[in-house]
Length: 400
Image (cartoon, rainbow, N blue to C red):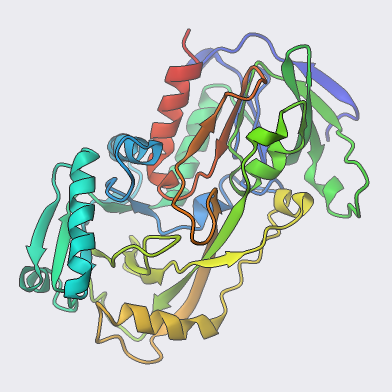
């Protein structure tokens, strides 16, 4: 139970081993440092139950994003760190490689742009191949040309998160599940965080103010609340609201392949990217399950409380399968009718909407509130970049 109207002041922040941190759901925070993302929605009873667990579980190479962007830099660095971390700790993963395919001659120039962009980003092992060579690697794939990305792979994201939780606890972090950061205020030159038990939000009605049961005053706050990061920042009284960007949400559905005795592919298969995403692609999990997705469906946001409680609509409508068959058969023409079954969905926290140029990660500290770092728009390649993002924050903000 949280003490009503309690107030706790953090001592000097100590990074790494000696630093005791308090991590709650929604936006995690520390008695000395506040860190975000215990459970992306805020009402989580386990770690990483939102955006972190509703994705393709792919380790990306760093091909798609503009050179020198945070997405490009942190993806390439994060990939290196993630493979090393998983290998050293026995986390299930596999470097299976990826083919990005051009299904028609008209798509080849876009493929060539991707190849050059990937090389500029520091992905040195990319190679263009003719469709005939791709066919030898993947007999079920039809394409004119393809890029081979040997360093792409797959990972068990749940095992990764369990490992990260264990390491955090071993370094003195306190994880507080079923609690929610509901806002905060600026006082004495720092951010005071308002915290409540998530159960107290369940029956909240209307516009009545949320009363915190606990107030924390850490030296450092990292708002990495995923889908809730922007709604939470708007509840930080004293933070200039013009620095909080507009929020956009895109649901992506996945369908699984049934009626097959063995996977028809050995590599990840990706089409040319589409607006809002990188296309409905083939993903294999470590158990051999074949998944197709995600598509892009722009959706409205929800109210703040529903966001904190992760009350987003994750329903996968089976009617969407008709569009999946159409786009998948461009590169997998032997896909049988009736072989796609609804899988799961995830929601991307985006900073750009329909018909707008793709946005970069936003790691924001220029807003006038000392000790607050906002992580906005951490969509794909957020999973691949996670350790790169952590390294970036530690090197920039936690220098001893």
